[in-house]
Length: 68
Image (cartoon, rainbow, N blue to C red; front, side):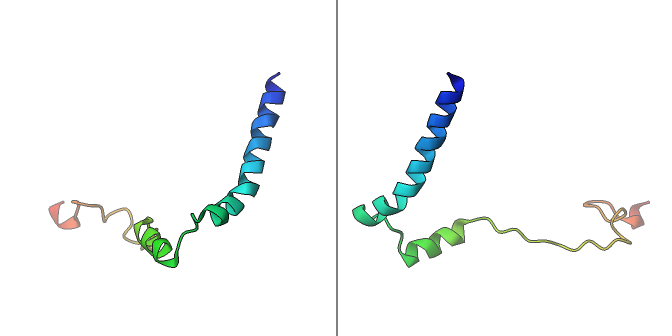
């Protein structure tokens, strides 16, 4: 019983993924380039920062070697 429900939900999702692009085109819900640009401005950006290995343990926020 549970296996059938699980496979049914997976099939429902697969059909939805296949038909959603066609439905967007048919009903005019396709995003314009302007909307895509506004959405990309709202997306979070990940910035990597290289850590200096010689100062990594002694340089913490609010902690300086002069206070010791």
